[in-house]
Image (tube, rainbow, N blue to C red; front, side, top):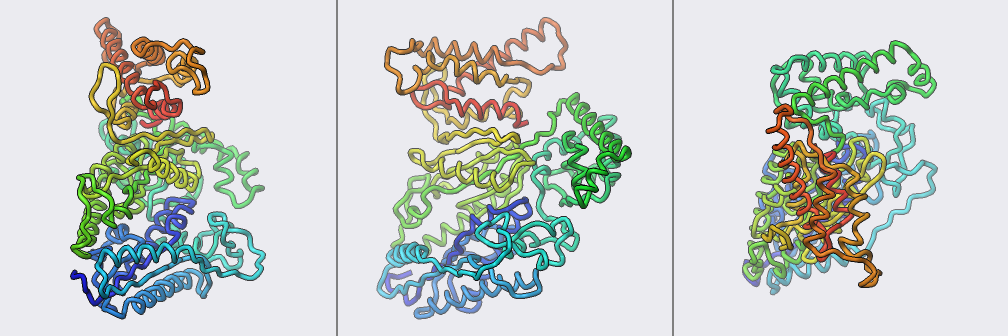
Length: 630
């Protein structure tokens, strides 16, 4: 583009997108919110190209077709419009998107209803005239930032409805106006209009969701192992059949699921198909709880109280629990870990993207954009982002996860616990070297915990990762079902440490040691290791910063390291192997414990801050991974 281009640069942004997406109760809500945003963006692209002769900058190629392409469309659309038509095109696009949303609302409620505060569509138009593209881009970004500081308020009159349980800034729809096609077990949920559209998006008349649930994702590695061993291990088909029969006797399952991606398609048959689609929660012995299931399969509390004393109901629940436990014991005997109750939210975001797009920031390869060449520079970036999104989607799916959205510069996914760190690393490696580094937030949580809390925590970890020097960090944490939690932030970049290994190593590399499937699968660490390390911290690290220099007898580094390794070795055990208990096997076990303790000691030191040997939260995360990421 020349310095005197007779066109207008327009930017159309959908604001509040992350908030709308994370205000989700189920994975289906989460997916639907992402698709709603993507469909609005794709509508904007199609309209600008077809009706206003736009040349797209972001996304440069428009919609390629198919659901996956629409998932990656950004919530900001940038285009060049014939001179003098920019404001007209942007305003018309905003009206189109508002009308499109209104049609979706009317389709759900069979009437027109207002949704103040969603969608929020903002736009700016900058005539290029004698400006360079770089000058126009800078002005557009500054103008859009100023526009976002001006809020359009729509103050409804007094209403008596309760607040929405997902978005308390909105009022919930009263029971008389709940959409008629909502399944019965949803009718009592207090949702605002915008969230009812989200809830019913992409569901069929029976309310089937089109996205795996949290327990389906958490249990995927275990169910994959069950299906893999189906024809080779006697007893597996019979135990799954017992599970299926017990679940069927309870009644019509109110929780309906789509088949989980990443599971083998063989063997075929009713029971394997049930395990792929409906069996995800039933393989957990703790699911088979009399009181909880009585409430779930009853319309009222009185009916639940009666059902939980029914001998036939109790026998069915006990039968299901025994089948789940016996299946788990059989799989453990075959070397398969019990089903993990945890999964992870992965939030990935390229660092300083705005600075990079302005030509002020560098890519990983040290290059900068030269905006004097015109909008083609940004179009190339858009194409690289599209390719990155495709590679990252494949990386997540290879790790057994499912993508909520992937735009190249950002990604949100849900991943089984055992492959979460693997997925985070693979998404980084899929990034284009011409783009800046990225930071990540990784939050492990129990499949029965609040999804909304997990999403918010993952994004908080991502923000903390971006606050370290140079960004390019990983914020990782966990929330157990009890509510106990921990978090730490580690740099992806390597650094040298003291000790036998002087090569550069990323603290994240060290964290990956604690994933059993990645290293020393037989090794276990006692949770008591943490308390013993903390008891010795004053001698290892010198106590709190407020302590005087001579207050604690701080051990020399080599001595302190030996003390740490001795404590690690004391709290290391090995699960039984297949080699028996002969002398040779005992020697091998001793060597394996020694090797594991050495690596754990080195890894804990690498994860600690400079001049320290212990980071309490990093140790908590390491122990959690060794216990739960299996």
